[in-house]
Each structure stands twice: as structure tokens, then as C-alpha cells.
Image 1 (cartoon, rainbow, N blue to C red):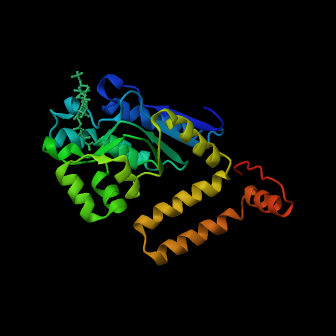
Image 2: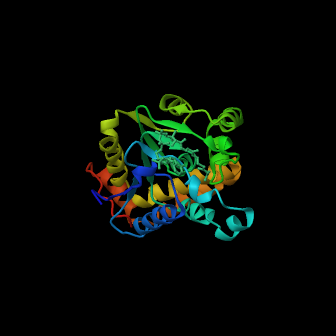
Image 3: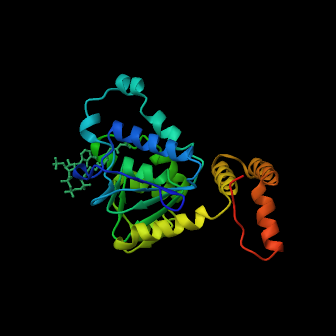
Length: 248
Ligand code: CAA
């Protein structure tokens, strides 16, 4: 932890951080630990070595069958991952492939090192993404590009990812963590309950109609007037001083 920012680093570089089931469970455990840690306001998820992650561990899953997959129910970990309420910044570099791309898309904001490549290569293995890739990518870039990228498995450059709203920023490789921590520190200084309810409302925009979403947003707006941070933020403005948010 640094400045109220919790850092999770994928650490299986010899296999390009390919995600075996144990690793996905450990990522989830670390996220849940940070979620319930009072002093942590923002989470940064990153890789090491030459890949953020080259996707699900192919050797581990190659012997699976429909029933073993149903019984394993490995994607329930991915569902829980999507329930984290604190902001998650993905700091990605190198290969962001398959399940690694899905993990990146499950983050809230993404900063990529120059030269990062994104791809859904599953089609080349006779399968398809199973941890949200077809859904999250389509909602971000639209059906036409999603189908092209998923059907061909082509590599998407960081520039194309930026131009299509997949990532927030491209930075020099050696500045990846510094820039990600800068953004995380800005978020950590914001009122935590506002961040949480903004994430909640924005996520609802994906599933709800405009009318339902606006009703939902309104309730969250009202809720914030029950927080001490609303009093602090508005008093600080009137008193012309910097606010100090406590997350209450
Ligand atoms: N699963 C298991 N092992 C993997 C892996 C993966 N996804 N990706 C890389 N590795 C292993 C390699 O087998 C290799 O191991 P050895 O040293 O024992 O041979 C090691 O990591 C280093 O990889 P490479 O030598 O291949 O490195 P490279 O730089 O030449 O190539 C790459 C990099 C282009 C990313 C290539 O490794 C590759 O194509 N990997 C597979 C990518 C892929 O198909 N991902 C999708 C997985 S399916 C999925 O993710 C399903 C889902 O939606 C949940």
C-alpha cells in the first residue's frame, strides 16, 4: 500500500502471466482484501515482465470438457471481481491477450505503456472468450469492430485501443507505474463514497434504459447528502480551503 493505493502485481512472468485458476482466485482474494481495507481507496492492477497477461493458461484448460467446466464454475470468480466497488486502475504493458484482455476490461481505467498489444486470440484455439470479452468489448467499441477483432484474433495497438475508448492513456514504458500512481493518488484524494456511487451509476448505464439510469443516479445523488464528505466538500468550497475527505 502507498498513499491509500493498493497495488496488485501479477507475478508469473515465466508464463507471461497466463492466468491459471489459482492465480485468478489469488487476484480476487487480493481485490477483496483491498475492498475491505479501510485505508485503501484505489487499487492498481499491473503485470510484470513482458506481458500484463497472455490470457488463460492453455495447458491447464486443454483437457477440460463441458461438465468439468460447469462443475469448476471458474467464472464465478470473475463475476465477483466485477463487484469490487473501489476504483481499479489497470496499468498494462506488453501482451494483453485473451483472459488478460478480459481482466483489463474488468478494470475501471486503463493506462498502457507504448507498444502494448491487445488481442482476443481465442478463435485461433478453437474457442472464444468466456470471461466477458465478447460483452465488454462490444459495449466499448461496437458490434462491427468487436466482431472483426474477435473473429480474426488480430492484435490491436495501444493507439487503436486509445482511439476506440478502450484505454485512457498511453505512457512511456518506464513511466507506467509512476503515471498510474499519479492518477491513483488523484482519485485517492476524492471523496470515496462519491467515487463508489459514481462507479455504481456509470455501470448501471450499461444495463439500464436512460430513464431507469437517471432515476437510479438521482437516488445515489440524494444518498451523498447523507455523508460527512458532502458537508466537508461544500463547506471547504464556501470557506475557500482544500477539502479533507474521510470517506464517511
Ligand atoms: N497459457 C499457457 N502458457 C502460456 C500462455 C498461455 N496463455 N502464453 C504463453 N505461455 C507460455 C509459453 O508456452 C512459453 O512457455 P515455455 O517457455 O515453457 O515454452 C512461455 O509462456 C513464454 O511464451 P512464448 O515463448 O510463446 O513467448 P513469445 O514472446 O514468443 O510469444 C505470445 C508471446 C504471442 C503471447 C504467445 O505466448 C502466445 O500466443 N500465447 C498464447 C496467447 C493466447 O492464445 N491467449 C488466449 C488464451 S485462451 C483464454 O484466455 C480464454 C478465456 O477467455 C478465459
